[in-house]
Structures are given as structure tokens and as C-alpha cells.
Length: 200
Image 1 (cartoon, rainbow, N blue to C red):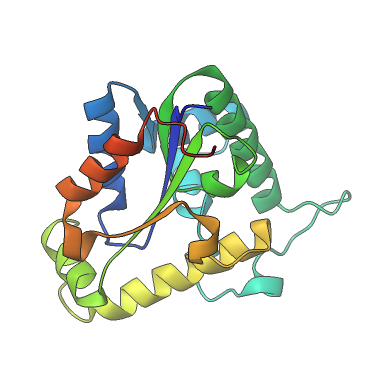
Image 2 (tube, rainbow, N blue to C red):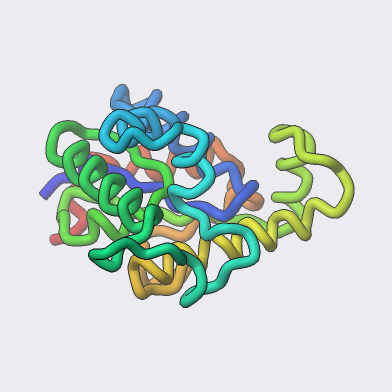
């Protein structure tokens, strides 16, 4: 089956969001990142800010078993409800149209689809530190610490909901080092695979 969906997982500061946006623009298909947050907000009633902060990261200072407290009568936390809503929206989008989906465990949610190409974008921490200061507007004091914290919380979230290791190359079709390749070359490589039946 030919590829019609691309999921972009990424280390914080690697430029994965830019890769997804530029890839979608080149292919003429939708990119769901901020737009996905809007759809989830409509589905759940959760505030966009809450979804943005908690839709793929564990709360600050939390780790695995203690990540999501406050279960309801049915054993679900607010975080669980958000996860279920995100999953539903992502599955619906993949069924409905060709698209690029950035983050939010989309690679795992769509793992059984043969028309989905999954990529993980990463880079050396020095490259990422420079990017978050110069392009994201982060404070220049100790950006490496913020990167490690963000990645740790993203990994915790991923493990809780997928029971897999975030960034493990066995779970993705491609691992792309944006610090070496650059954003444009990452887009070139993904665009070159789009529409191909590489699962055969």
C-alpha cells in the first residue's frame, strides 16, 4: 500500500515540527500539529493550552508510575481522557485524508496502518540548544538542562501510553539527524519516500 500518512516524532529542539510543516507544504497535504490541538480541544472541551502542555509530555517532576494521578471512578485520569481523545482524532484524520502528523504518539497509534511512514528527528544536544535559544526564544542560560527535562517528560509519557521506549529506532522507519542533514535534506528524504509502497 502506498504511503499517504507521515508521522514525525522528535527530540525537543531538533526542528521536527519544521520538518513536518515543510514536508506537508511540499506534498500539498495537511500538517497536523497546532491544528491537531484545535481538533482535540473541540472534541474534549479541554483548553488548547492544557492540550499543548500535556498532550505528549508528562507533568514536570513526574516519572512513569507517578505520572498521572487523580483517577476517577472508572480508573481514568484527566490525562487518560486526553489520551483517548487524541487517539480518536488521530485515527479519524488518518482514515479521512493524506496528512503529516507531528508528535502525540501518532507513530504508535497508527502502527498497524501500512500506508504510514514513521520518522524520528533527532540532533546533538548542542545543535538543539542553539536552536531553542535562537529560533524558539528560550533563555540562553543552561538550555541543555531544559532539553533534557523536556525529553525526559516526553519519554515518560510515551512509555506510559505505548509501553515502548521513545526514540528506539526499532519503532520507526527512519531516524534522521537534523543537525547533520539539515531540515531541508530531512524533508527531501521523506518526500522521496512519500507515495511509495515500501512495506512490500
